[in-house]
Amino acid sequence: MYLDSPWALTSISQAQFWRQIDFPATFGDGTVQDCLSVDISDWDSPGVFGKPARECTREEVAADVWAQLSAALNGRGDQVLSDDLVHSWFLDPAVTGLGGPGRASNAEPLFINTVGSWDDRPHACTAIENLFIAGDFARTEVDLATMEGATQSGRAAVNALLERSGRASPSCTVSPLPSPPQLASLHGIDVQMYRQGRPNIFDMPPPWSHATVSAGG
Image 1 (tube, helix red, strand yellow):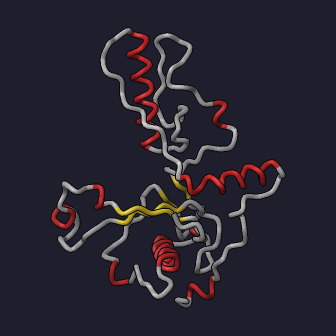
Image 2 (cartoon, one colour; image 1 turned 180 degrees about the vertical axis):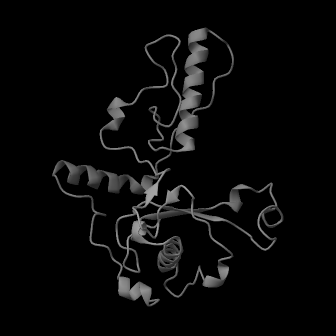
C-alpha cells in the first residue's frame, strides 16, 4: 500500500502464493520470475509526470506507475526496483480510450463501499426462511468488495442454511478479520477527529514533488 503515491497505488506479488507452480516454466518465455499486480485507485490526480492517469496513453500509465513504485520503494540508500527488472507489462483491457480522442473509461472499476452503505446491506441470513445471500455486498467483517468478503458471506450463508434445515453437518469456519493492535491508537484518534468535523490525519498535502521524482530524486 503506497500511501504517498499520487495515484493511490497498491500492489501484490503473485508468485509467492502459487508455491505449487513453477512460475518461469508456466508463464512467459522462461525468464519471468514473478508477476507484480498493481491497482490504480486514483485516475484523476496528476502523476509524477504531471498528468492524471485518465489523460495518459497506456505507455504513459505504465511509465508513471513504475516511477511511483520506484519513488516509494527506493530510498534510504536501498534500491528495491530497477528498470532492468521489468520484463514486460500488461494493462487491463477493461480500461479503454486512453490517449484519446474520446474520454477514457473503465468497465471494471475498483469498488469501495461508500460511507453509510453498511446500513443498507443485507445479512447472509434473511427474515425469509429459504432466502440466503452471499456476495461481497453482504455484511461481513471483510468490509470491502473482495473475493475474501464474498467467500466470508458464502460461509455465513451455508451455516445459516444448515441451522435452518436442521442438518447436523459441520459448520463452515468463519474467521474474524484481525486488526493490528498497533493501529488501535490511530483508530481512536480518527474517531475523535471525525466527531470534531476534522479531516483524517492522513488527509494532508502530498509529500512528493513531481519535479524531484521525475528527475530521479
